[in-house]
Image (cartoon, rainbow, N blue to C red; front, side, top):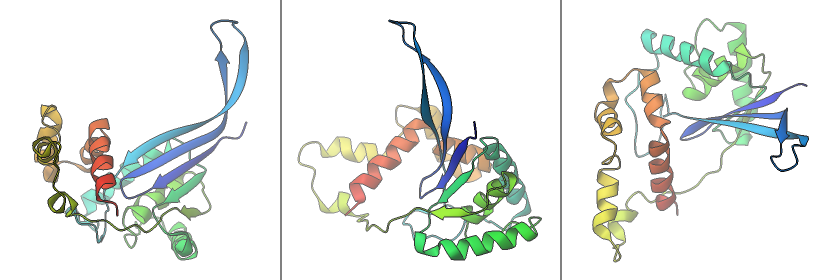
Length: 212
């Protein structure tokens, strides 16, 4: 059966979804079998490779040859998931623009397109490697209040809140060390850190708190 999969790049993560994949499920009680369409999801967190208006940014030279080689290697790894649909953190109204850029990239993929950050440097190449014809934007503009923690007094347990914000990996020495040396890590190690469940939980928590 044809397998449909999706690659989604968002503010925090890239998601690869696979659907229409038949799986056999055995029930322990009756030992019967039934087939079910399942959607496989692989979330891959990333930071913005290019310009961003986000409050927190990563120092990243998208024109550096070594970094581009790392991106190529990462794209090959992601392409092994065989996505057939690719979604990126981009408002749908700009689909035509970014797809035009993607078509231009296909004419000469020897040079990565850095104009759209990770959306073009990574998604374009993964799409090319899997013969995906177009990309789909998934995004919604939302406002953040990054100072809300300073503006609202936590009357229940302000000490725990501040400790969590300042030392999110206090109970995980290995993650704390990666966080401390983040700027000096290779790209793949940076993304491994971003994709650790505790890192994802922390980012989800603080972003939920900052949303207006």
